[in-house]
Image (cartoon, rainbow, N blue to C red; front, side, top):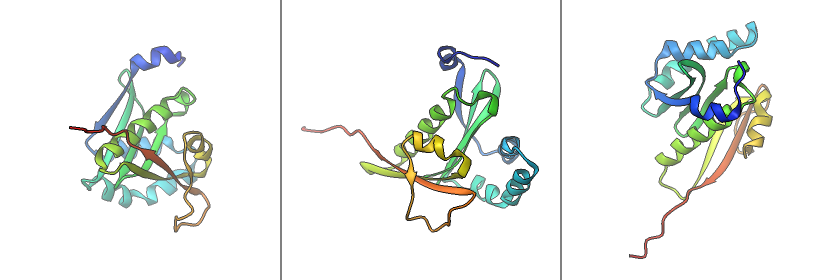
Length: 162
C-alpha cells in the first residue's frame, strides 16, 4: 500500500495491549524472514511467556486502520521488541513507535536522566544509531547476531519556585 506521510499521521494508532501470547507470538513469527529465524524465535517461546506474565512487561501494537502492522515492547525498562511489517517500513512508523515506547519508559522513571537499553538483531543497527542509540560497551553479551545499544534521555522537568 502507498501512503503519503501526511495521511499516515491520521491513520496510525498505537495501543498498549494486554499481553496476549498468541497475538504477540503471531506478530513475532510474521516478522521472521527465513526458516532459521522462525526456529530462533520458537526457541524463545518460554522467554516470551515469562515476559507476558510479568507486570513489568508492556506491549504496544501499531495499527493503520484496523490492520496490525507492527509491535513493540519493553520489559523492566529495556526495549525488547520493535517490528514494523516490511511493506510499512521507511515511512517513519518505526521511529514513531520507538519514540512512543521511550516516552512510556520515561513516564515510569523518577530520574531526570534515564538510560534506555535495548537488544536488537544486528541488521537493525543503522535504524537505532540514526535514532540516537550507541553501543552499550557495558553489556555482558558478546557481539554477534544481536547488538546491545543504549541511549541517554533527559526528562524535561518543571522548576518550582513556590
